Amino acid sequence: MYNKYLSGKQESKADDSQPSVGDFYAHSPTTSYSSSHSKQKQLTSSLVHNLIVKCSLPVSMVENPFFKEFIADLDPNFTMPCRRTVTQTLIPQLLEAKQKVLQELLHSASDVALTVDIWTDRRVHSFLGVTVHTYDPQTAEATSKLLKFTAIRSSHTGQNIADALESIIEEFKLQGKVHYIVTDNASNMKKALTFVFPSDSEKSDGSEVGVEDSNDSLDDDSLWSDVADDQVLVAVDRLGERVPCFAHSLQLTVRDGLAKMGVARQAIAKCCKLASLVHQSSHFCTAFQDAFGQRSIPVVNDTHWNSTFTHLKSIVCLDSTKLSEVVRKTNQMNLVFSNRETQILQELVQVLEPFAEATDLGQGEKQVTISCVVPVLVSLNRILGDLLESVQFLSPMVRELHFSLYERFQGIFRQLNIPIPRGFVASERSKNLNFDSNVFLLAAALDPHHNFQWLEDHPGSEEEKADIKNKIIGMLRQNLLIIPMTTISLNIFLFLPLLFVTLTLFLLLIIITFIFYYCIY
Image 1 (tube, one colour):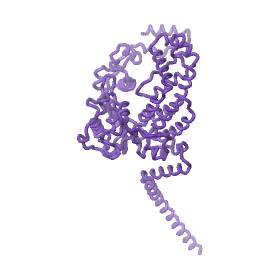
Image 2: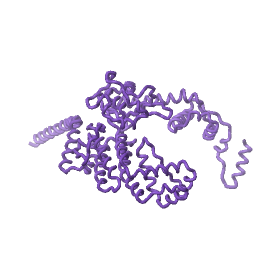
Image 3: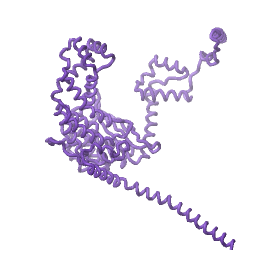
Image 4: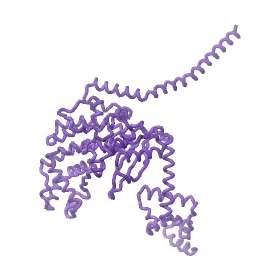
């Protein structure tokens, strides 16, 4: 080792640098950290928490020889835990620690809201996900946590979903704290919430939703058949309200409009064929990338309507001359867009863009989204009214979007006294999604990002807007009556000590004045 040190010293004379003691000892034999060593614990925790959990890497990674070699290069003293230790000890310990933090947060919270969704993966395994939303008293910020992620092995009936929800509420001791649960508009989910939160406004037979609504939310049409009313069990918690998912409801509205696009069908069919060729034909993909670089055309996903908007917009934004050259070069002449089809696609993107923006607003993860429902609906109502007078090819589609928007969200439009669109006729089976709760109006008014600015898009007169504003303020005062009372009490308690000190000083001043006057005279 000394000879290596001398040879390194001789080689370093050329660049006038001297090896450090740390460089000399870097090649010396090392010993592994003990299991109780702080560095061993830190790296083990980071391995499980950051790589396996947050990066979703497989547990089998810890047995990969190349990964072990990589870790040895980073820190040769670190001992890699085996797969069995990770799965049976480390991950359960991490889960237990996270659950303990979550339980402490929920114990200190006075009010919570839940988001519930159920879905089926590619292997036909069903899962129920429940997210809890509340305010963290330590940071005074809104927070959302995954409350439960569990497999559903029974049929997706409303009673089974209700039983699962009630067991979760009992497990985390949330009885009396859950006042709102957000779900999609599937009949089984709506029926489940009538068991958990029974009320006269919700029909227990699921008849308020048509078959066309449930098909978008369920993987199997037979799943929306439900239990009979005489099988309903007594619910544990009866103090809440179901809130429809705004993004899902907006998707149903857009779907109604897309069914009426008529003249745009041929142009859309060409767009779908282009996307298929880009992803399936190597010859076409090479010609496309030679013309447009690494850009691509996204494929439509039936479960997310905004993928249709992204798909169409990506084609509209392409250089039409280059696209025509690519199509001709690959002998796909039937995919050449005419000037009329190009104008139709541009108009279609113009019509769908406000709905895509509204969907993104309603799917925010880091901010409260319920406050944007009323501003978005009022804005969309105005935009659709303006588009109906300006569109050239898609008048039936815009009219259907306007009608569907009013019918599905009529609860909010009625509260705001927004008039029925001209020519509107209610469908034989109502599409009303029960947006009748006052919480949407109160949330918009309480959010400083919106407040009452959305009233500028209201079609009514200034007097009508003032009446709506006063109406909402009245609801706020009624629901938040404890706030002014608390403020008054607080002011009284702050005023009494000040009054006592003032009177004491005044009396002392009188006594000093009297003594001073007596001494002089």
